[in-house]
Length: 113
Image: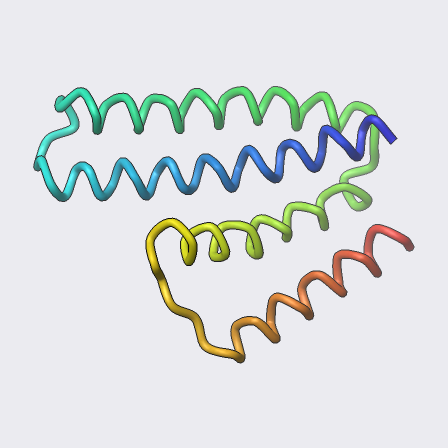
């Protein structure tokens, strides 16, 4: 059970990293330089988070079969767009949300098998 908790934390960490990368990209578009403190901080925070998530993922893979925990990574395809909608005002079609429901159903089926 602890392994699945950490696998889920890796998913949330990856989603948070993607949001940080988008914030860094927006900052870069505004400033035109990676050397501006805000842009550099966002970028290095995202990279550091990805580094920590990679270490945690390796620990998860020591404890569980890849085929059992990897389907959970698909949750990032749900979390990132939802966060981008709330944080950046990005819009999605109803078909997109049908796809999210299908992804979540697939995750449930894959993890329970």
